[in-house]
Length: 375
Ligand SMILES: Nc1ncnc2c1ncn2[C@@H]1O[C@H](COP(=O)(O)OP(=O)(O)O)[C@@H](O)[C@H]1O
Ligand SMILES: [Mg+2]
Image (tube, rainbow, N blue to C red):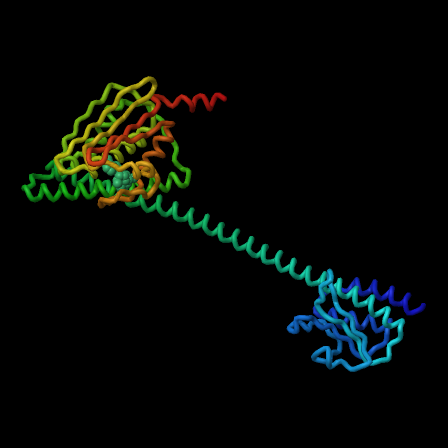
């Protein structure tokens, strides 16, 4: 076997090298079988990267003991280093073999470098992907816990609050004995604070249910006037305290809807009307039928809502400039969701300083559910 044949065999072995940190050692060891030399070097143009040197004694290209063979390491005409062997008088044959060797090493190193970079990029991407996935998982879990926490605590808060409201009602009606004027006033204050707090708790509970997609309609057929009167009764202490003149025009209408949610819609609108109307103000509640829809409206002569706010008012946590106490900015967002759940629509008519009117339109019966279950 002549030198060239031997070299071809060696090249095959070089290609089979696993490109790890001993690449230089391995390459030169193999090459030594084709051309004899003492020391081999691979220098990179970037001096920090003297990575692949075999038995290196020289710190730079100039220090290499002569006689030596040197070839540039090139990739697409770009010189990125030098390969050298030294220690012997080399023949013409050696020179030829070495030149080929240098060009093969150039390609191999470039390959290794590229593979390294690509590998690093892939690793970074994978790491990023894992982190993002873990992160979003955590967010989802935290969100679930938050929703659970809210609905649990608000439930727990609602029960004692209802008994505060119930007992202050009993006291106020003097079932447990006569009250003097001051006592009556205090009991009324307890009741009003309780109603406000209940409103807040309900808003948070409803919002967390909406977020969890857990809002379901519990359909019932009922008289609109009955549901409206109950809501007015609940809110009446607030209305009386502010000396608001409330009038109602409720037609005789039978509605199929979720009773409690329908009341919540009116409670939120009426609550706002009371909240955002000055003392001695005026509120009008109307319910009438138009084609197959119930039209429910709550109109006040309070501060009104400017055009800009009207556009975002149904988004959660949206509030006007004058933020009232007992406010979360959730009421209208929830109201809007509840109306949508009934396949209805809510609109605003308002002129700043003159008052606001909220108009809800919902179908008299939830026919689409029947339709849906048949198809
Ligand atoms: N009847 C109304 N008159 C004037 N402004 C209103 C009325 N109803 C709602 N708003 C405005 O819309 C905002 C959002 O209402 P809402 O979602 O019920 O939140 P909150 O009552 O908790 O502030 C209120 O902060 C208020 O600025
Ligand atoms: Mg409100």
